[in-house]
Image (cartoon, rainbow, N blue to C red; front, top):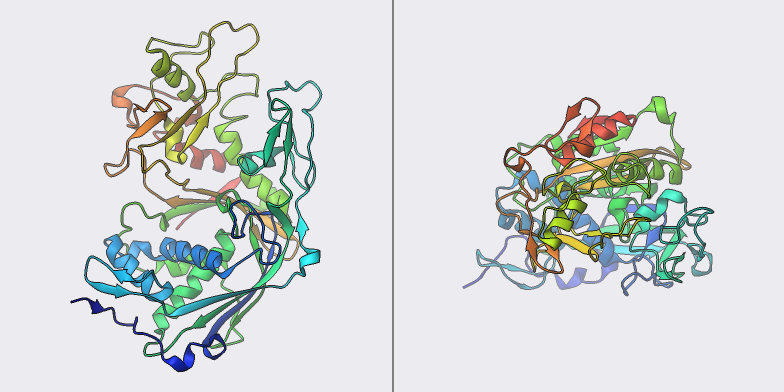
Length: 465
């Protein structure tokens, strides 16, 4: 017979009313970068409820795992404790534990009046003078030239043969303030001091390292804490980022279970005071962080400009895989059949454009992704603005300790359409490749290691977690 997991007994009837649940935390938060999505419909803002409790609970669960996964030897033990706090759909797990409501309740109140919620600018713009029609144009305010990198897939539609971009008016907002209440459900079980500390750490990680809405790993929906209140001690201040990291460091490292991104054994890259002063405006700080990743993967470090050949090997490898022949671009040295950027997150869309004076046919677009049913591997890299006061932020990059594509448990990496399995061994079986994996005088084995070095070369200081 199933056994009820300790702490998940049905709550007492007297506390089913939310007003009678014990208050734990009360936060007032505001956006410092545009928020994408967040409503009940994908990619749309619900004007009556642009932020909802279900969404906040989902972000808190992710950051609870990121902060505490290193304690657990396997996912079953980790999800057991997570379900104890945040609940899980009713059912029985592999150990015969019965799940249901958790010990905490999340309530969200939007404080900005509906008629004052500021949507992102809906605008189109032709390419810059001299820019080819098939190149990505720039976006007007509040977006800058480099913002399209974060907004790829967010920008609503491509129109007129890729000549203009439109920001769909119902998808993004740039100004919003809301309140988050965390309450204890109570009943026959109550939070322990250790569980309360875990929730506090997860809240701190979420507001400092995460955000609200979609594309938070690219810095959209970053938050600033305007008020933090703990009902157990109203004098307690919001945890600093350093306080969150210290709370993560105190436990012995047992895991994390494979497949769970974790803060422990990851690292932060923060813009140094020498280059950023005491901070910069929120959007500018976000762009500083985003620019490092964009430059590494694309323009500057990855290739000189949009009219030049990529220094990465994936394009030639795809051409060879599609044609079945010894394809090599004549303007650069031979490259191995290697897909190093797969370790920065999947899927990757590769778009081929016929260059002027280039007669050889190009393949159609290809996606580099995991095998069917496991096509996605979330990027371990977060680029965002970290607020230092009401108007200033510093650029922050977080690299989580996350699975690698060459791990034995990782899915096969394939080209779609077609299903061609591609090489993902970082050692290349003795083959050599430098290209963008060379930073300064050192050639690194993996894209993550090279990115880490590249960020340092761009004025970021590294902190090991």
